Length: 403
Image 1 (tube, rainbow, N blue to C red):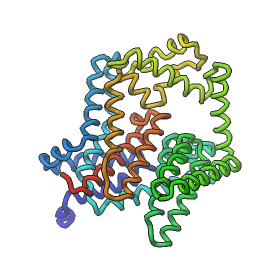
Image 2 (cartoon, rainbow, N blue to C red; image 1 turned 180 degrees about the vertical axis):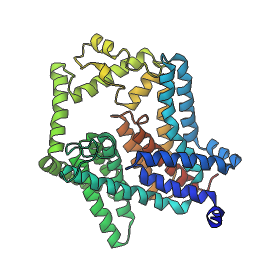
Image 3 (cartoon, helix red, strand yellow; image 1 turned 90 degrees about the vertical axis):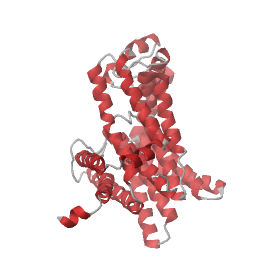
Image 4 (cartoon, one colour; image 1 turned 90 degrees about the horizontal axis):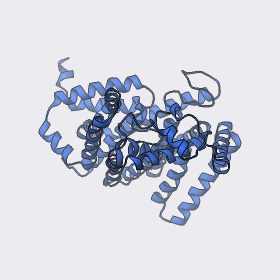
């Protein structure tokens, strides 16, 4: 016991960060326990002058703090204060960002990524087993074989995982590891297209183009290769994945009904209607927003006024788009703060080309994911955001030896 407690507290916290990366894709309970332990140890650790100096010097974290503060101020014009408080209370997952930023040590970075990749491999194995009818797990079905996350979130995380694997493939020099990354990339890509998450499939196509442009010097060759990979993947997916083909038809049929018949009741149409209605809500509450809890209050009224044939908007808790949602409920200040967070993250500097590429992939992934989901209010989305923004910020700090 004496030897255990002689270890530096920061070492245990780094072990927990690695465990956090492993738990994120497969265990909400594990995430909650690790978050509580990390917070307790971080508070016990002290060293506040150094921590506060590091946090104040990071524009992303300061912007995140301003965003949460503005959310709290919106309680003054929210119609249901208790609901708004519980809504904002879910942002406690973001506490992991300053904790990881001030705690992560350089020697543990590779273990964080390895733990995440291993956990995604486990999740993928479960997904295939459900898809082929070899097992059942909770509410997952062969049509949506995503055992641990909502299918939209899983597809986005899986698309980001493929970008990490491809980045590792380009960097790796040892042949057996290159083969492993390529095989895992192939199975992860296939898994992405047998799942029902169209968001992740779109993200994957965009990430392929960006990654090839980043790693191949001849840009025309990069575009041709990315196009070939994308077209081949889409063709094979359409031919051999009933899930992918049916979801494509469902989306296109929904858009056709909206464009030609003003019928927004199908999935594609409802997403378009939400953007239209949410934009009008924002423009009518430009400065302060509607307040948290009021976002969908007049959605049916807007639908009627705009002459849109939609389903009952009371079926939906939000606009399924974080940018529309934040703009509507927190006004121009809220959306500017949110966009500033993404901008400051994107502008974060790295010495390593690998981490620069992963940063770009993460920003693209999360912003596109946010266009189809309330990404910073559902648990998996918040943990995805907290884990990788915290890790990326910490890597930048360590590379430049700041704070």
